[in-house]
Length: 427
Image (cartoon, rainbow, N blue to C red; front, side, top):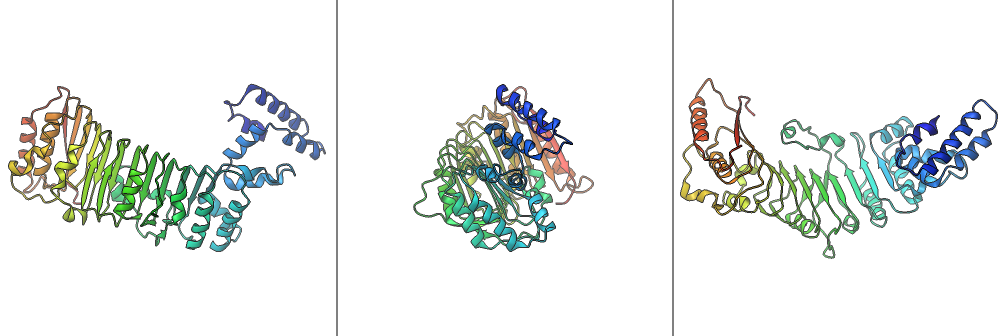
């Protein structure tokens, strides 16, 4: 019966293999209640190799290892699995058995040392209350760098996967109390086959001079990583097919200089040390920038025109309180200083949705909106949200004035709609 359930997941396998496996299931079912354990083991051993590999691939790592108890022939079958995953359930089972941190790290080390063949997918998410010495990470990543690693998730935040923030609004609800970060071993830069990579709560301070990049890297997500600008630039320039880059709550990163013809999705959220952002990514389609204090006070206001110049194919844009709030006073902006964002020759023909979120100091944001509406021929919806208003007090005239300005703005797209939202919560 167990084999039948497993086989139900394998509709993509060949009919011949499925027919043979079904015959094995029938034989196993006929042996239930009969004292013929050796026959049942023989039936299991007769499973096609592609079915066995698929079973092991779909099982959690700890359960895949348990298959070594099925028979002698299965004893070392698990050592060739190409995906290893150590997450919450693994740690819970280890804790239930009375294992401490050092014993758990030894278990992971033994599993890696006994493994035979490539490891394409490796995930380690350390839950709250567990910690490993840096030498453990050194040994593990050194081994993985020689195993053809393609998909890599490493989270040492001590609070699990829920700490990744994948929506602009979720940044306000993040938890605190992050564990002290470990320095990423230099062996990481030798994982040349990487396709996707997620790092959480590590120090990625410097890269070796011999680093030539990740030629196959498509997606990178960095969260609460200590990162230097030079390392980020080397990572981007050395990844010719990089399509997605998400940077959440990283620190030590002062200048973000993104120059990539392949990048399509960029997110920069809550990076408090950032002073300037430069984009040279003509194929960028989705951009989210949300910078909070103290980054707002340190941000170079002169980088705004250059920031907007290189987004001709943008389709989705979210600007938080960074560029639209920084260095703004409660007065009419100086058109001579703004120079119409210095982007007159650019037409954002691919823009479809835009969301701009600011505080009550929103005069600069209105000029940004005026430029977007006048140059986006495919625009469908522009959402303008103001946070921290008090319509029962002095902010009412500001809102009325903003609405009047919005109504008078020229629109390049006949379908363009402007949605005005206010939030009276003081954040």
